[in-house]
Image (tube, rainbow, N blue to C red):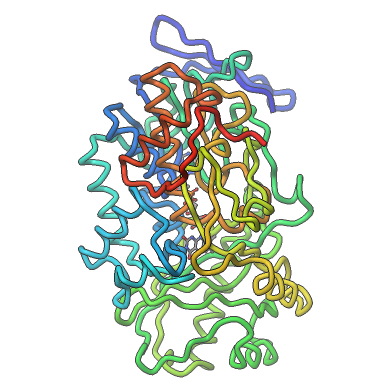
Length: 478
Ligand SMILES: Cc1cc2nc3c(=O)[nH]c(=O)nc-3n(C[C@H](O)[C@H](O)[C@H](O)COP(=O)(O)OP(=O)(O)OC[C@H]3O[C@@H](n4cnc5c(N)ncnc54)[C@H](O)[C@@H]3O)c2cc1C
């Protein structure tokens, strides 16, 4: 897709034109105030980006399609943080660490979660309460003076394609369309929506790769008798019995299970939506309906088959589809599985991580389930005490001046994406992108030629755990 250009007039209106088949559409759009940094998407990546840029002294706008911050962790009901430590030490610092510690102190984590566990244990998921997380994020952005527009979507971009610069975005909400300008832009939409509108080269699941990792519509359940509850997950005999009885739409043996988020409350990560294409609205819409039907099947499965869940009630399904894979940018560097497997460290690494490469089964056959388990057990995990680096260069679309892309849609191959797409890594990438945007405004350095030695030093001061001894002014490109 080619980048688009809007023509702002002196009368505070903008004119945008686009070709839709044979239909030529022109309209005047009012111009809003200007910002230093605009962030599209207020998930963990957007939060990390917004807080770091605002705390550096810049005025920041978050444009968020839903009615709360947190992204998949709140609107998507994915109420657990993926592993933050490697069995020996905490890898996650900075804003993500601040958030999880504040949540612990406020009683917003699951009742069994403790710092001595989530800052040390190998492959430990930290369950949390979505409402507490929403409240804390509201407070943090307000304290930092960040402006937020909920129920607002970025729907178009005004781009100087020659200089690879974004001038402004078109947002849509109850007030209609607005043209909003900024000095810098960070795409944290999970789906690389802004990058795609700008004409950045992207990889799309199902188009540039033959398969799409399945989505899951997550749920919250109540009234679980945890002291007497059986732990049911992958290939459990109770699950296999229910599959044999024809209980489910899919013969899906892969069940991550229910995570304890309250004394009787659990978050279900279960029920894959095979083949769902999150970049196709019809597929997404049908997926929401099928997801709700399947969530009900899990409710009755737990009630009928699993001890401790006889009185379980279904509180709600998510309002945001749990998308694992959709669109990723092609960045200055594309992080590869080899980098992960060899525990590669980078001079410009902005985070260290250890989490497994988690590629869910692509269909509900037994054969595919076995493929998944074999891969997960044999090649997908680093050992305790190990880690790999996430370089700055995966946040920068090739050659771009004032655009960064953080979180699930950063630049990586599909396998390592199965590790870094999760909330703690997204937040650390966001913090790096927000810090980079601030540095760029201050120094005039473009995103694609930012001094990464300065960036790493700033991130260290902000609490990021970046032990690399050798720094480099230039980012990693090979
Ligand atoms: C079923 C499932 C289970 C998972 N389990 C875990 C887990 O246990 N632990 C873990 O840490 N991670 C887990 N993950 C991964 C994780 O939740 C996400 O990958 C992570 O939240 C990505 O962060 P992000 O900030 O990049 O995007 P998101 O969290 O997806 O946030 C993107 C935000 O952008 C907004 N947005 C999108 N388009 C626009 C637009 N055009 N304009 C304005 N706003 C827009 C969205 O509304 C959303 O709020 C899971 C994912 C799935 C699907």
